[in-house]
Length: 490
Ligand code: NDP
Image (cartoon, rainbow, N blue to C red; front, side, top):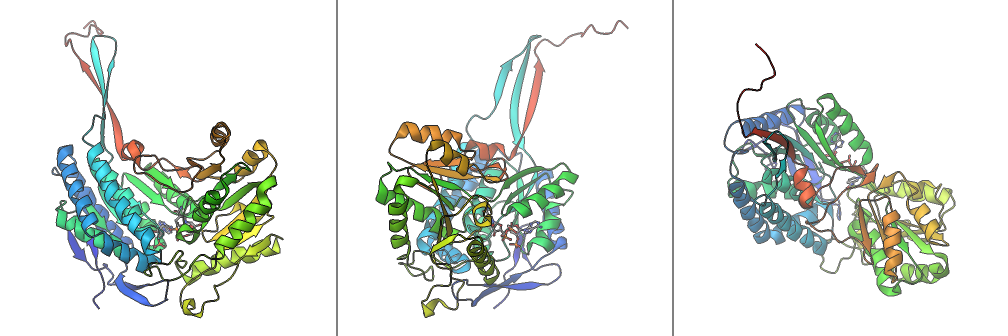
C-alpha cells in the first residue's frame, strides 16, 4: 500500500527526505499502515506555509462569522464520519470503540463550540480620562505549532485546531508518530471543507527529529503542547529563545479522595473508571486512590473484585472494557514501575502482569493493577505511570486527605467522593489542581477550562479560556477631541 502522505500548504506531500515509517495496531502488534516520516525540513516547509497563510490577506482578516462557517461545516463532517474516525482511533491507539465514539462526538462538539463562541462579544471598552475612549480587542497570535500525544489522537487534534482556527491563527499540527491515522482523515475533511491552503498543516514524524525542530522554529508565534512533563520542559526551553507563547498540558498523578460517607457502589465504579479508562493512559487519570480508614478494607475488597472482572480485548469488540497499552516500549515502562512498587514494599492486590488470556498475547495488554498500603515516599505514588496501575493510601481525617492529595509535583486533576456537600466543597477548594470533580470522575466538557497547577502545565484549553489562549490582547486608545497637545512651547 502507498505510504500515507502529510498535508502541507493544501497538498498531500511525502517527507522531504522520502522517509516512511510503519504504524501498528497495539491490540495485535500487526502493522496497520505506512506513513511519511518527516524531520526538520518538513517542519520548516510547513511553518513557512502557515506563516504565508497568516501574513497574506485571506484568513486572519476574514470575518469571524466566515471562519465559524467553516468550523461548523467541519463539525458536521466529523459527525457524519464519526464511526470511521472512531474505528481508526481504536485500531491505531487501542482504545475501546465506545471510548473512541465519545471522542469523535466530542471532537465535533469542540469545533461547534468554538465556531459559536468566536462570533460572540469578546472585547471591552473603558471609560478613561482626557475625554478618550480605550478599547480592547482580541487578535490572533499568528502561527501555532501544536504537538499532541497518542492517547486521544482525534480529540486532541480538535482541542488544538478548533480554538486556534476560530481565532484566526494558522496551524502546524504534529500528531504522535504512533497515532497519525485519524489526524490524516481529519485533514481530508479539512480539505473538503475548503480551508485556504497553509491554514492547517499536518506533519508526520517523531518527537526528536520533527517535534523538536518544529517547536524551535523561529517563524512560529506559539507552541501548544500536550504530553509528558519532560518533553514539555524541553519545549518550553526551545520556545524561550524566541519568547514564543506556550501552552502546556502535561502529566498528572491525580488524587481521588473517598470519604466513608460516600455512596459505595457508584464510588467504586468512579474509581475504576478514573484509573482504567484509556488503560490509565490519560493525563487526568485518578491514579492515586485515598480512602478514609474506616471504609478502606470494605472499599478495596469491592474495588478488587469488580476490577478483576474488567474485560480486556481488542477495542473493536463491542464488549471490550479496556484495551492495550500503546507500544511494547510503553508496556515495559509500566511494568518497570510495577517491579519498583514491589521492591518498595507496596502490596500488590491485583494484576501486575500480562493478562492470562492467550488470545491477547500478541498485543500490549496489561492487567488492571492495584497496589494497596502505599506511602507518599514511594516512586509509584509520586511518578506518572500512565498505565492501569492504581496506588491506594489511607487517611484519618480531612486534613490528612488534603495533605496526601497535594503531596506530588503535579496538580492536574482531583476528585472528592462524599454525600456531605459542605465537606466536598471544603476539600475540593484545598486541592491544588485545575480540574476537579465531586461525586464522579473524568467527565470533560468543551465549555469548561482544562489544564493544571504546579508541574502539570501552563494555561488552559477549552471554554472561553481556550480561545483566549490563541489570541493577543490589543489596547486601542481613541482621542475623541483631536487638537493641539500643548506639551511643547515651540
Ligand atoms: P511525549 O511527551 O514524548 O509525546 C507527546 C508528543 O510530543 C508526541 O507528539 C511526541 O512525538 C512529541 N515529542 C516527543 N519528544 C519531543 C521533543 N523533544 N520535542 C517536541 N515534541 C516531542 O510522550 P511519550 O509518548 O514519550 O510518553 C512519555 C510519558 O509522558 C508517558 O508515559 C506519560 O507519563 C506522559 N504523557 C502524558 C500525556 C498527557 O496527556 N498528559 C500524553 C502522553 C504522554 P512522538 O510521539 O512522535 O515521539
